[in-house]
Length: 134
Image (cartoon, rainbow, N blue to C red; front, side, top):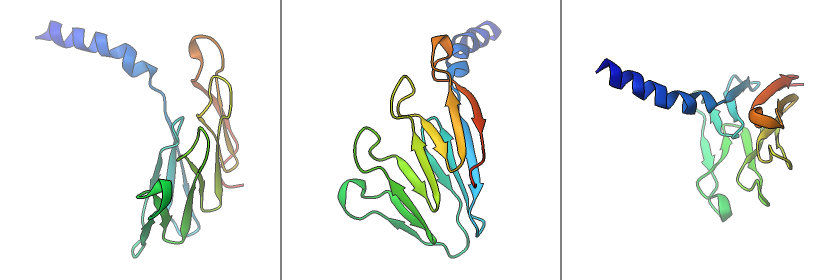
């Protein structure tokens, strides 16, 4: 049994070590927490008592969140990044437009994410600079 367990861990280790994510979180003026994951751009949020969630009802984005309380969520409507979150309230979100890191989260408000571009580490997060709110 111990041998099987060790073999399973040995086989899974390369796959686990390749995954790299960075969750960037910030609060709005009312205390709602928003988060976005680099490099994918997946959005998370918290609600305040009484918050209402509004969803897109028409077009290409039916069912996606349009507004949380008084915070509007905007999505890219065209091109390769269609459907990605591009604005949460007053926080703009940008993605890489070209190169080996195309489509990866690049900027959240004033926070910039830099990725390795060459070699075996290509696509890995190299560093962040700045902060979400200016």
